[in-house]
Image (cartoon, rainbow, N blue to C red; front, side):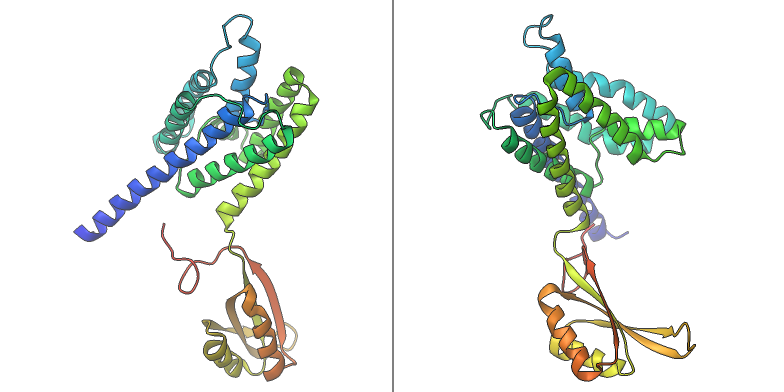
Length: 294
């Protein structure tokens, strides 16, 4: 590795840490400014911490702070994960978890939604999904139930981590329903749905494109038209007919949503007997689309 590459990798590392920090603060804002004031339990350790705060209010003035419960619960989870998953797994999670707990401590708990439950569910879901997206896209994890799911998966390998997380988070939401009522729990479900959609879009890509496969007797003409007129790259793939066993050439290309009409017109004009397959491409990285930077 030369000096220039080493500097680039170091800069990329710091950039990722800064983005993870931003993501955790966005998540903490969702908890302290929306979920906690609205008594909305959306699962996770922070959801459990909201329940603990309410339950302990008669004993502790104001209840046990959300950040403190989050820190206390994560300590045994990290120790267990260290034993069953190893140092590398824990190291990737530790930074985001510590920053998330710190953000919960720093940010004030204040109701910015003014008791509008639907708006709270939508805004909280957006903040949580966006924050998680920034963290996950840069190789981080906020620990909590993610750690618990990985630990349980170690002892019960026949069940996926996703299924483990679903059971754990659902249990916390049901617990919240008993403490705060069914209405709060139902709005929490809406928040989880919105958060999941935002997270999926951030991880899989929000810039949609179209992936096209064209099987034709005129692959060269179609490829030339796409290159010169539509101004997109093409790949010609050698193929074989499953029934006829004849050699075929298949043209593959990725175009934007606006260019798909031009592609259809191109195929219809040059070789209308072609077989055209078009599907959605959630994220396209490379020249002409999004720069690869990982």
